Amino acid sequence: DDDDSSGGGGDDATTGVAFILYDKTMTGTKLQDQLQSTLLAQVFHQVARKKQAVATFAVLAATAADGPLAPVIPGLSKELPDSFIVKVEKNVDPLFWTVDGEQYQTSVNLLQFVKESNVPLVSALGPSNFHKIGHIGRQLVIGCVDGSNDTQVEAMQAQLRTYAKTGPTAITSQYYFGWMDGKLWQKFLQQFQVSTLQQIFVLH
Image (cartoon, rainbow, N blue to C red; front, side, top):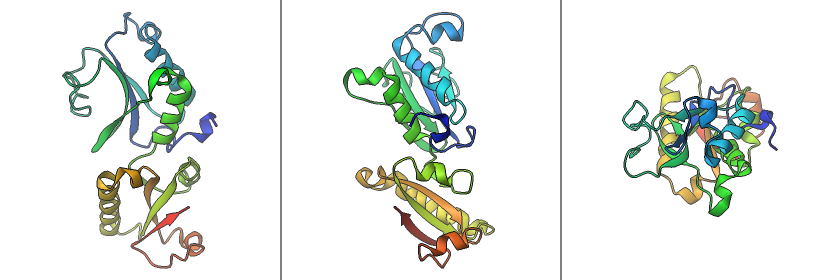
C-alpha cells in the first residue's frame, strides 16, 4: 500500500527519523534543478513528495561533508560512495538504502524502504501511532511501564534500545520496539494477559 496514510511510524514527521539524499553528481543552482539532474535524485524526489505528510526528507549539499550532519553520517567525506540515501536518527547508527542491481534506483523499492524504516528504534506507543506501526509488517516488542514514573520509562527505553541496537540482526530486524503506558492501556493489555507493569511482551 503506497497511500500516505500507511506510512511507517510518524505523525507528520514527529518520529525523530529523517531520510537524507547525498549525491555529489547533482548539478544546478536551484534545488528543483538538482533533484532532476540524476536518476537517484529523481527517485528520492518522487518518494519525498509522496510521503512528505508522514516522513521527513532532506538533501545534503555536496559541500556539506564537514558540516553539522557529518557526525550523523560517519565517514561522509572518505569511506562512503559519492551518492546514497540514508535514514538517520539521533543516537542510532545510520541505515543506508541498499538494493541489489538496477532495483536500487526505483521509486517502488525506496517507498518500501521508507515505509519500513520510518519508525524510531524505540517508539513511544499511543493512539496516534500504534495502529500504523502495528500494520507495517513486523511484530511488536512492547515494554509496559507506569508512564508517570520517569525512572521506569527511562529504564524500559534503555533496555529496549540496548537490545534493538546490539541484539542479533537476524532477530531484531523482524521486530519493531516500543513502550507504552500500562496504566492508560490497562484494558487493552488485559487481552494479552499482561497484568503487571515493567513487563515486556511480543505482539504478533
